Image 1: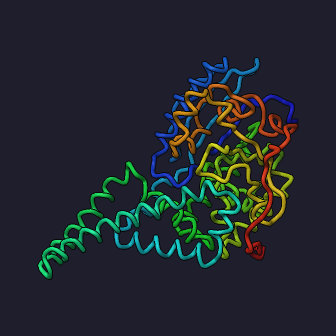
Image 2: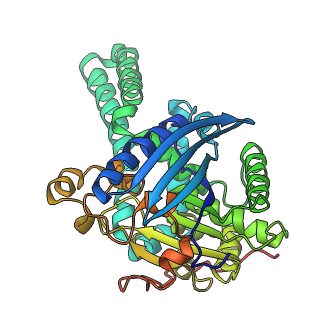
Image 3: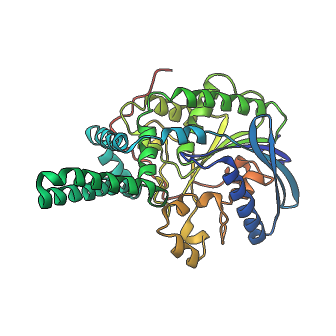
Length: 393
């Protein structure tokens, strides 16, 4: 099939970020937001749930530009591993905070990342400041109790300190301080190798993608969001190196809202840098990266390969939230960190070159849609990291 031929049958593999939410949550986002985008853009889109063979998927029937396309979207589940990694108690979480902060400070990575893109580093400091603020409030309560009651104040103060920390941890579903700490720490402390449970899961994902390439699809598309972006890079780079990519079915990677430099700038991230380098020069896998300056949780318009100092990377495109969302909606969401970071999966009031549902369910391959589209003129490629060595192949 040439890139100009219409896609009749597609397989999409969606790789989420570090998110405890189940697959059903993402299917409902696709169903709801897809219907909204279809109404705005004037195309047909029908979503139907599918659950079989131990996988979670949904099927999409689309009518766009006079063509009918059937897409099977499979959710690559690892949210159970995320949930398991978030079970640390309060003392262990504070120890994790100190270890992770010290890792970024002593390596100089923190300062390099600030030079690259200050916005996501403000988001990174949020859990640090909030958790230290909670601890400071608890210690203040302890000090006041001892000051007022002397030695008798110690048990009362310790009880108050404990209560304050426990209450704040229970409120974390609203303030996300612990959650964001776990996001950054999980990636930072697994730069040399993933936990066995995740490694086993990734091997299964590779087999699923390889199987889809042999099933007569017109395109196989892997979509990675946030942390899932660099997991997608690792998956496909390893598959190509291991000879798992066969046949002539177009294989593409779409990365959304990536945070690659948070990991690739660390001294021991040699495996990731190797895979970034390999995928950046691959002629078999077509890669498009989409971010937006309005998303404070990503490294907007930063070429993940180039800024890591290991070559040239994918097509860099902007979702341009300030232009593709209505002024009212953009103003409403501007300071809503998570809404902006997940906007890539939602409908746009004024869709430009980026339409998630047209990309994943429409009649064009990723390369057919964006092959002639130049990268954003605001693309960033300068590397500020002093760690650019890669692992031996």
